[in-house]
Length: 82
Image (cartoon, rainbow, N blue to C red; front, side):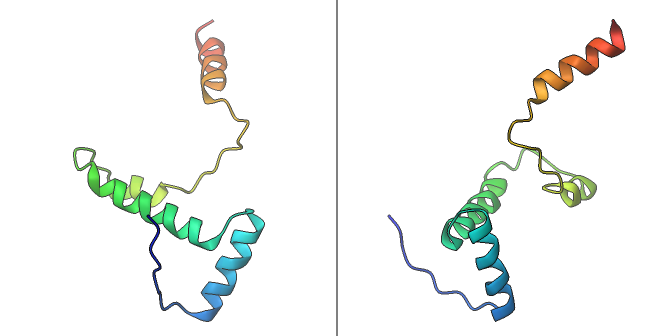
């Protein structure tokens, strides 16, 4: 069930966020909702402890959608050990 939420945010931030949402072909509401899901999911798994360094790096790298890490890992290990 969706519920309306009212937020008070600086106009310049809202304008940039709307532009970002348009560029990503998404709605601002969806982006905020997904962000809040990520934030609250972190709190649901307290058994995983991240160091401050790892927390600062989290989300800083965006891999291309077509990137296959398993294939790249396999190639790297093959080069190293074969």
